Amino acid sequence: MSQYDKEIDQAEKMMLSNPDSALSMLDAIDASELKIDSLRAKYHFIKGYGHLKRNRSMIGDSLIVYAHDYYRGKDLVRDIRSGIVLAWYKFWVGDTPGAMTMLDSLAELPDVPDSLMTQTLRIRVMLGASEYQGQQLIPYAKKLHELETDSLRKIEANYMLLTAYEYAGENGLRPLSFGPTCRLCTQSQLGRQAFHV
Image (cartoon, rainbow, N blue to C red):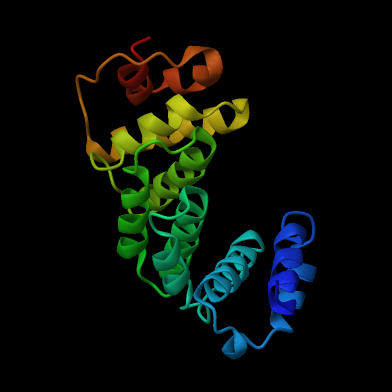
């Protein structure tokens, strides 16, 4: 194992607890010296993921494309996560439609663990709502609602689904079982339509 491999592994382990330190470790590495494809992909993935975790601009992270291409079809977790990071990069460079297309492709992958699918759908639904998508957003919002397990995020998913229906101008909606988590939504006409209360 090379010194760079050890440093990148250490930065990856630190990323969840201390992303700033992990990014500093990565910044100390000269990326042009990374000659092995797997090491270069790992470096750019971890660096992009760090910027995503810190909600920082990714304008300079164009090589996340390389990392995502490398992981596609090889490692499902890194395929999904690098795809999310690539979507984040596309968003930062002003390509919101490209970001949504990337997330759509991830949402269609088979056998994705619910925890990864939920992360993908949260971002997809929020971007879609910011673009006032209606009909196109409804299936993603429904799927997100089905997968959410956290009660606060479930309320957010309810709201996003309601928003998608509103943007779609839907009438005669199919019954959905949302339970008591969104009683305030039933006060509006749209709420009564979406939740069939």
